[in-house]
Amino acid sequence: MKDILTISERAAERINHLMSLRPSDAETALGIKIGIRNAGCSGMSYTMDYAEEVSPGAEVISQRGVTVVVDPAAVMFLIGTELDFSEEKLSATFVFNNPNVTSTCGCGESFGVG
Image (cartoon, rainbow, N blue to C red; front, side, top):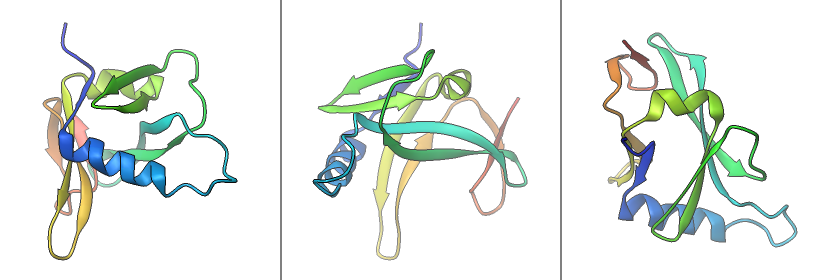
């Protein structure tokens, strides 16, 4: 069976950095939570936030010293995906290398699966 999600070294470094930026008085986050929502011209887009808890049915992935919680509704759309991080002169973003994607919109903000 394929892993739901693998985390690249660059993505793990960025997640660690983001976790270090949380204010000391903020609720304790377990890691990063990944989900999907209906949006954009291709149908779906990824969501990322701090994971404060693990909801029933969620998948918890611990790799490279970081924890990612995958929302139950996103699991079937992310199987086999690599979470990476790209930093260029004018942009820095998490990149989802998702083998399930069959279409994307022109701006790259949304995707569809077949």
